[in-house]
Image 1: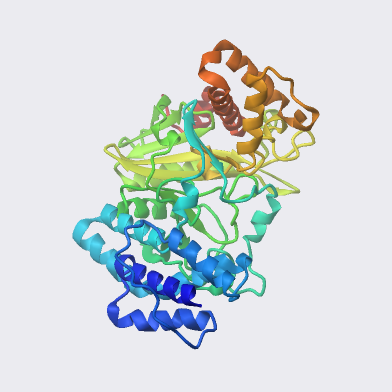
Image 2 (image 1 turned 180 degrees about the vertical axis):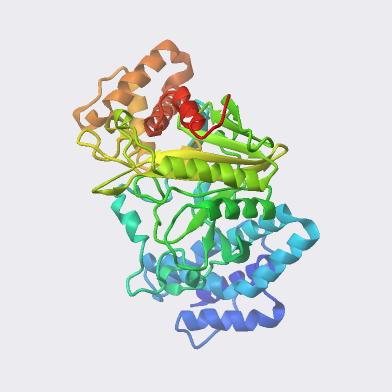
Length: 489
């Protein structure tokens, strides 16, 4: 048991150095850990010097190893006990929020979110060490990542359930009641309250974020995902509070929305995504709103960007576009707003703040299906499903693709086949398109290697997936849609 006690001492010392554990509370926190482990005795471990680690990963691994060896819990329970132990050692929610807003008042929004993010990493809520192992690169104007930290999510029907928790508490996986809830290993979750559109919301970081400081703004009320005029108001309220962040709302429908549709929330963070950098293919104006411009983006998806320093103009134009789109029908293009299977047209709004003012991008989406495309006419088409079958949500629609972890090994094997001049074996038949196209790229530049060829191929496929999601394949069709609202070139 001596090694267990030594690990506890090290973790307590780490918490003093990194988590704001006051010396006055050190014995209390230590006894909390002993209680968790069912221990009624303690002996001084080894003296621990100041820890320079950015995260407690090594200490927690040592803690799990020593506890398993002592028979205190099984290895499969390690994650649960790590979460519980760190929850004992870190600041409580009120203390965390007080420090956050003190920094916000004294040093600004960027400093406050940086502190909060770093604290969540140090507390082992944000799994940065795992995230840093995810392959990530830029290709074809997109950012592409391979997500090794989470399993592939292929069934969009589960989204409608919103990841409900058995027993009804908390009502879903992002309700505020999850803060500190041991049943979902959320002892280390910390949030900060914010006000959006006069409503009580909160902000938290994602433990397995897809980009830098990836987080979610969540409604305190457990209400279903939806978009209306108030959505645009709340999004702009958010970037007024955090002008260094972007924030966006998933379309509130399966296949084109997020994995939690049962609870209203937005996604954002501290990274400029590729779509934010896209230039305008066409620019329109409105006589009613001379202080705004409406841009049809030069982007693979169908996106309209509204730019103005006037929030009221943004809201009016965005709401006019939303209303027109949710009722829009063009059977020749496969666009049907509603049928026996329900509503199909929706928008994904996303906003950043720049020198031009607010830049509100409205992504037009449809989740309608057909016999030919049972997973969605405007979803990744079947030839690309081996690369990406999961929902194409807000983040991918903005140009950051999250591909399944299995691809790391599968694509590496295909690269070896290409460089060895070997044919594709039967078990890899689903990769024929990828193999053939990557071979052609490799053949045109063999000195760059098969890995570079595969990256180019992934960039090409992801761009084609975005084109699949475009409801208007021709930018002039988007212009015509906007001209129907009275906007002119």
